[in-house]
Length: 322
Image (tube, rainbow, N blue to C red; front, side, top):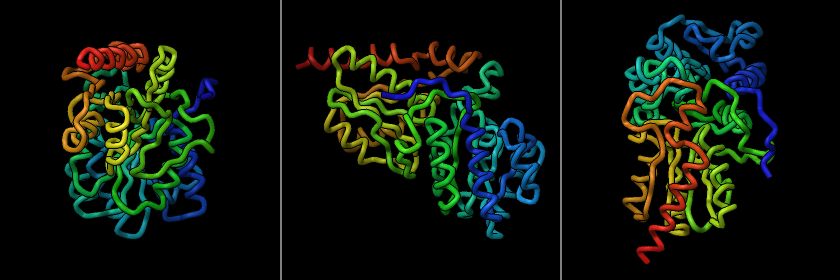
């Protein structure tokens, strides 16, 4: 059983704590922020290791270029900047200075998805995965919870190459019962639940939603597989093909536009290798409503109850065709 004790620590705080621990042992680990040390929870890092911290001010294009230069000098830079600006305002620098130039820069898009809630479309980042996953030479990762964020950060320090990471602003409920249960490897999906009737594939904060939907479906007699596709690129195509072959139906759940994100990535594999019925649940082609994460999720059907109903409808449609 998953420990349902409410988590009060945001992934961004775990990221800072883990980087600080690693940076104490490795002087090459550096953090850069764009007037966002507070938003990124990097204040403690800046105070304790000022020589390994760079504040650029509100200059997202510059921060990416500076990080690329530091990487060329042998440093291991982590850029922590709001996802909405890092993935849009600085996308040319990400494409050229990081990906095309093959520099070892880790781009941490903080307050991703609809974390900024009430600030609306200008601060929502629901196109970032579509943009970044289309850039050659750039990995894309969305950790599910605090435990996966810790494991991911530890892995990124030793990973050579450009990476875009998206994390949310607020604490999220745990998906993993303990750190020991979290088996994180870049490019390898995690099977959170086994199942044979249908597969739910989620990434980031929607992994918890998918797990709740699995429980609701299990109570309705449905055997549901849940895949945590924390790495959107490189994508674990084998896990997707296996799920399609063994369960025959797939639902993707994401805090992103229904265009170009996790659902699109999975669909590209499904349509070319094992075509099965599939549904994509995410933000439709409209400016997302303003509100708290739970309100926005509920409005767009990114909820256990809605996912359960979509799954049951797919299963019933299959029985009628049979």
